Length: 355
Length: 244
Ligand SMILES: Cc1ncc(C[n+]2csc(CCOP(=O)(O)OP(=O)(O)O)c2C)c(N)n1
Ligand code: SF4
Image (tube, rainbow over all chains, first blue to last red; front, top):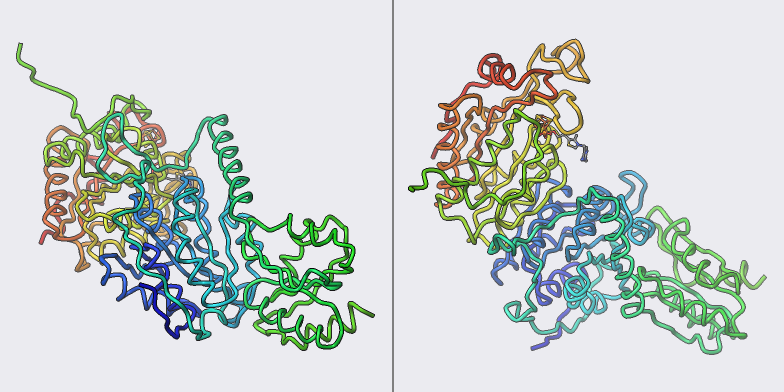
């Protein structure tokens, strides 16, 4: 049965993951995501799962590798510096074609940075992050309900494509309390069998090996090609975005995550003031909704795009690539943990974009 | 005619890639024989690490996971907890376990993870061509300490059994040697004990095996075994360090 509840973003993420079938979690404390491991530490045992507070983020991601390799629905969460530490493990997971879910509640950087919201890990999340040719399926939810909806299905997507799924959030999304509808618990005993998993039950011809070592160049190249064929399929089937008032828009704002909510308010203010604005919001950051961007860019009514991020400008590179120079793209960002207001974006549009 | 010897069914038919005189092969066989004897077939997961034994996943006749450098105990933790009915073992070299993976081995041990770690101490980085290992002996030559390990410059060798035996989580910690037949017999006994403790759910178990690397020690296989029986065993005494 689904139920309605007032929940903090981080806790809603943890509960939705469990209802989506998560039965193994390993993580190491770091602000601003601590509510996720804290919640998992008692809740997982209620559903017959396992929780480990690991000695480091490096160990956590490798525990996830082990649990996922043995067939469990496994997850880890962290924030920017910890996600950097996980990169080798994520690369192994991608290479060994293991499904898992990774949460990054992004904080400002580089270095120890700050603990306030940021979106400065976009490149790391969408372009590979670790070594080698690979991608993850990356979501940038903008509300607690959207976190729940994405987490609930994240393990299904991870299993279907045997790919790591990353949720790119920020401190604001983790801390905000919103009313959410929680879906009913999935029955993990009824999930499709993982015919590749090293469950310990197989010997001889049927032995299963979880591995990312390919010494023969041709074998590694064919793995690379296989992965990229899969990414193309994912782009075709899983790309998600939201269009808000773009039909007649002259100025198209674009943003993801919590910034998209701020940009949506800015669109409303601009419209109240007679400026035809709209919002194009990527929900999947990889695959990036490039086709949607090109299609909007080709509309004669559209004059310019304005990309807003909590960074010095990372997603804007994908926006520019997607619109193929059809329309100019301006950038408005804040960093260091500072967050823009809707009025800041309105002001930027008025003074810099429409000047 | 009566069959007096048979290869254990817990090893595949894949030929070992190890150098002539390397003791990795002996260690593999002992582990596989024990797995067969304790009836692990059909509920067993092995973790291969990074080092000369990386291809262990081709040799053990059970489901296998290949782990990143040093992280085998963390991978084993995840695999064991995903289905605690499995017997789970990790097979690691000294660079893997005692250098880059020091945190993972200590914490798996202190958490009392119900896994068995087979620790191959050959006092050198074999796979990368003979660099100094955390277990390299004082005075022993390696490509990154060409005049011999000097504690002033290179620090001191680390004794893993002694270190882990101070923790509460382990139920069986032992060091054995592969340098002679009588030692090999004792090593197998220790390996069996470790797995039996795991099966009883007693806690973390590890058997360190003093091993040779004739290739990177620049010795003949016989000289290398002599070195294990002599200098190595002096620094790394054999025996059971903890059993509860
Ligand atoms: C992160 C990382 N660093 C370094 C390496 C390179 N590397 C491969 S094997 C190895 C040393 C292994 O030595 P040891 O664990 O003693 O095993 P042996 O080869 O002697 O059996 C190193 C440093 C690697 N694969 N990954
Ligand atoms: S390099 Fe040393 S440890 Fe590696 S296979 Fe050869 S003898 Fe064995």
